[in-house]
Length: 277
Image 1 (cartoon, rainbow, N blue to C red):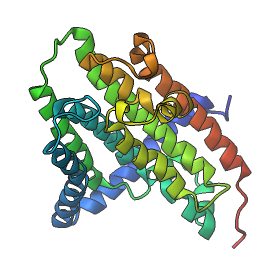
Image 2: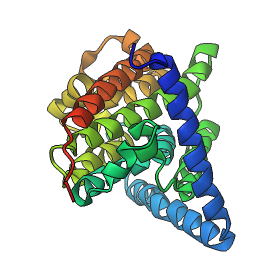
Image 3: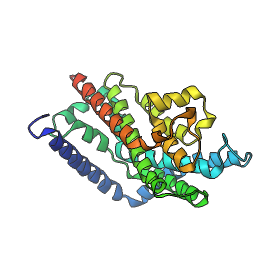
Image 4: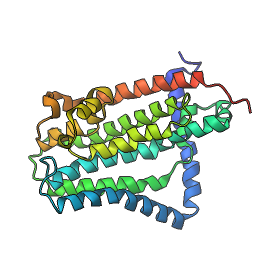
């Protein structure tokens, strides 16, 4: 048991605290609705430029790595939506290094609320809905244009893929934040795996070197966010001649990633020493 309330009680406490802190920031944001609309639209437009770049590429070629525009749009939409959900919920984790440097993390430690919930909900940015909206629109376009033989299993794969992918990205956010207990200036390293990872997954695996594909499959399992399940839906061959049943493992991979990230977070938090200032 981790304390008198036990792990389940701590989880409930953390979720409740997260909701209260996020609600506070949402109320603060909606007090200036015009500003919220402009920043959300700016987030939408900025992320949309990535897909504009893909459209420009397809204005000169018929296929990218053997994939058509609707197929690439499907990869883009699933990766963008999954990451958008994770960024909305856990995107504030990259601020941990700053709190460690200036000592403001100490104020969170004395509160009777899990530190992870406080960090994750800090400055909850509702404007990040723009990224999710943009990803869903591209995914909707792909689903309308693609000519696929839909089955109940493929339909079910879509929400499972997006939610599992969001959980994997969230685990990367937490693990990256844990690393910042030792390397306070490592937020950009974390961003290379989160923001960089979603950019990677928006393109077919066939355009990347096999060593890179192996790395994001067996080392940092970002391939389970959308590559493997998406290729099952699209009826495409798997990279590296992997078995087809791997497409059904994203939920399990997400659970393992979250467990490992949670362990890394606890180790990092225990190793923290106050600045003394």
